[in-house]
Length: 299
Ligand code: NAD
Image (cartoon, rainbow, N blue to C red):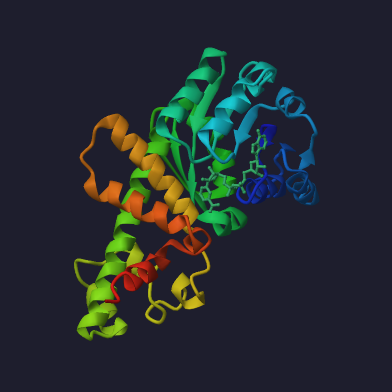
């Protein structure tokens, strides 16, 4: 039988993830600071509680899906926080995307309080959360990861154990740094191709079968036409919103600084997406960066 889960943070991602756990027969007690999020979760069979400590006191796994590391650490530590309310042997499973150093700190806080901890950030977005097809990148001890794997298998299609605490976040942030850089590179190539008189289709046909091939081109093609399912064909509705790419690249920059890595492209991508996300780009798919590149190339 499944462990009882206290699900803290029932937002765009947490809401459908909790609903999938309920559908699979997992007992889920849920809490969010926003009443509407609780109401939606209640409709999906989540047993909502007005005091998160009440949920944690009954749970074997405390799953957090919160905006940032600050939220996770303060939820753990607040007086009284989630750690103070938990039963012995509880596993703290954080699925939020947060700084690697904060993930390590959160795990350490849980471990110092006598509990076990796993970080398991996801990719796949709201669509993946609803369909139960998320990809989890997991950091923690073998036995703890094994204990939560059945829950991850309900909410996702794939879970890769990347190493110790914090290394799930590390893998996610490295992937998204590649993604940010390559989406800009593909946008720049299409704008140059336009100026030179290449059709989008001709450039796509060559590059998609050549060494420039990448996800940013063949799945998330930034011009309408070559890939009928790409966000460009629906006026850049996300997909993966610019605000989320900007957030993940900020996490990447923080890790680059902490580790003193000479990553000029990663840092530049972070700057480009933070400017993009300061305007309309926040709510557009991040492939719409091509429009900024084109606008800046008009003279
Ligand atoms: P969201 O803002 O929709 O949900 C977060 C929820 O946490 C909100 O409902 C908020 O009210 C709640 N919350 C904040 N503080 C709380 C507290 N102390 N106790 C209880 N609830 C609290 O965000 P989201 O899109 O669901 O993202 C959650 C995490 O997943 C983020 O770290 C995000 O970066 C990551 N993520 C999001 C996506 C995506 O496509 N949305 C994809 C991958 C990863």
